[in-house]
Length: 93
View (cartoon, rainbow, N blue to C red):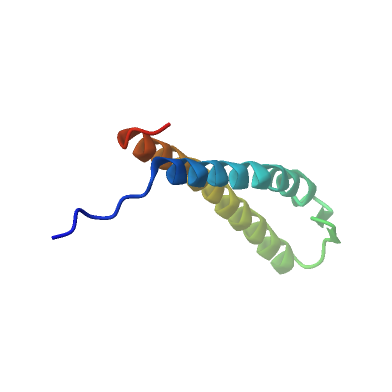
């Protein structure tokens, strides 16, 4: 019978740091996209407004991409927290 798989606490802490660094690296790009590519009355992003259908499609794209990116950065932060908690429970960090 096996004692199971053990991942060393330092490995877990390294992974937690990588998750945090990735999330922190994404945040400025998400913030920039939120403001710089936001639809306005006469354009969406960097493209001059065309048809109403295209404008609605762009608004949906902008909202969905922001939601995805925000969810991704939140999940990276949650994963980092979970990895740190696992490392602590094994006596590390």
